[in-house]
Image 1 (cartoon, one colour):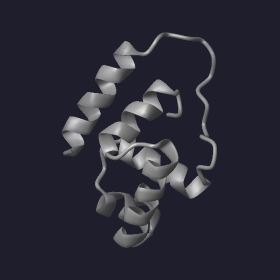
Image 2: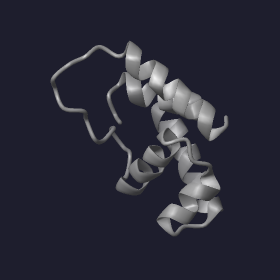
Image 3: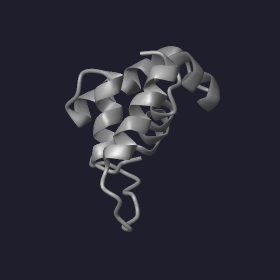
Image 4: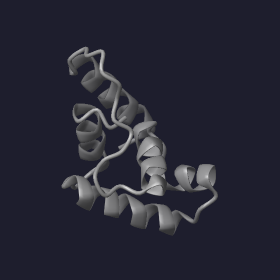
Length: 91
């Protein structure tokens, strides 16, 4: 998924999400602070390489963390992770 498409998907889900005055939950059960940073980069539509550069990590570390996020959120794709994060108010 390209960064442009990821942003559009997030925009669409944001419009579908109910407007609630409650603050967004910043963490998901079992998601580490580093994984949260990587998840936010994914939500911004960044590639693993771009996320790695932003956080000072290797692309392999970012890829491993992304896979761990998928497993913890029980999804198989970046789009699925982004959709679940928006739906569950994780970002």
